[in-house]
Length: 628
Image (cartoon, rainbow, N blue to C red; front, side, top):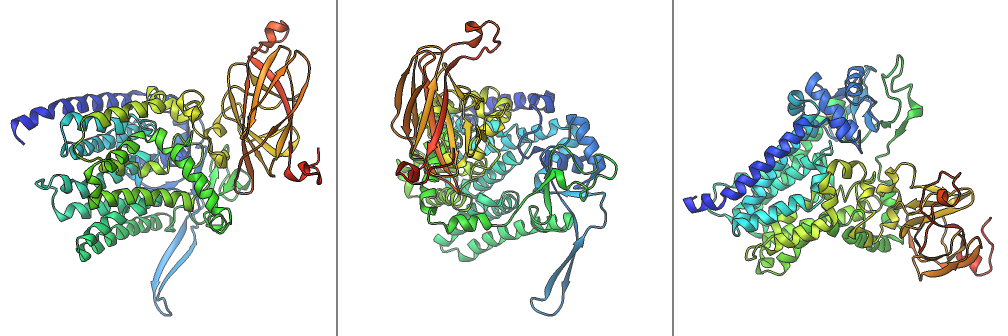
């Protein structure tokens, strides 16, 4: 590179170094358990495994691991996935198929094994050994640093450095990525594997004179994707296909076959390593449980066998997927999920991966849309999306109320490579502005956004987006305390409520209060279809309430201490064994109970109290009514 080239990239290098130093300083100096507000999602399993690898040089769970974890978090590893180990023997002998795998239970009852992929804890272990829990965050900083360098080099090979810098920072800062960087889980690790793999594969396409224009870079990419396929089989396995198809389009049949075979072989070796550790190839298979509150080895005689009441067995079969795919409702579910995947309030691609949307539009608007390798990258993204929606139609976001789409996060980096040459800094600016509308709150404090993801959507532009009605049990509101999700409506066992914001409260004996502070969105989940709702509403102050249930809104003026009776038409979506409706309420006025009655210590801003009864189509047409 000449002197002019070195000078033009100096600004990007300085900015990158400053960001790396700041992030590293934060990573090594925060009190991880307290700053991250305790455990989230699947962190307990990965943290315990990384500690075990770092300090015990093994990947089994024993009393020592429980003591170490509890000493750091001052609590047990809530949510940890553990499984019984097995002793495996492989014999080659007759009869067909000649290779026979024999297993039996591990006779050592004083150790268990982790029911998650083991490669991420192994990568994090050296950092943990030196820096403790902070080492996991520091490993993420190093991973994202490598990703930033690769992303910038790829984009800088197609345009001015300022354009590359704007786009790179937008992909990393104006998306949900900062939130996942503080999760002590393999999301950033998987992201890194995919981005570096596609960089090694495609950099030669935009920089043919580079030293990376060698066949080995594609094989190295296949190795990285093979490792990631073990760590996150879906959607990573789909992302291997473009690496195979591009050589085939260029008549490199053997090269394409070897690339695919290498990815499969590496993934197989990783699963084989899992079998060598725990006795089973599938880390999610066998006798696998998740523990809360009470754990094996936490008191004398407390082992796997003595803990059946505190452990829920986790199923890993495909029964639900088979039922969903063969259901006559499958096409409708797919179309609903496609809308939710793209524009969903909690998990949507557009709000939480906006720079990726900009990359797609820029690619389609350019002459580069004819590049065969870019077409394959887009098809990889499309295939990953379709795989998630078809195979996991009701858990495609990752489950557990994640911020954004946790499963798609692994495929997000491939969209960076769609960015074509020929544009100025404009796409980067647009990516920053559009992405920040939805993610700026997350960027301010990613630790809060990671622990309390439901706060992100309670205010701001995201509230204007559609709610993923069929995924009520996976929405972030399920994490809110006091309980706001999966709340039974009064005594009706067939109706559950999910209060998506703090402008309404779970039902009390006399009804459900809505706030005078603004609009409230509540999912009504019923075991039966609803034709309309019969409402009773009252308030101690004059107010006008507006209520809708997916259909036309109904507006009613309430007089003080007089009960109003009215009906609201319902229109919702059918889920897997349930029917879901979005109840939207608004009260024009509010009052504070304490200011009306000084002895009342309730300081809430209340608008009106509602009581309702669902009416089914059968009941509405004069058939048998639901029991009251």
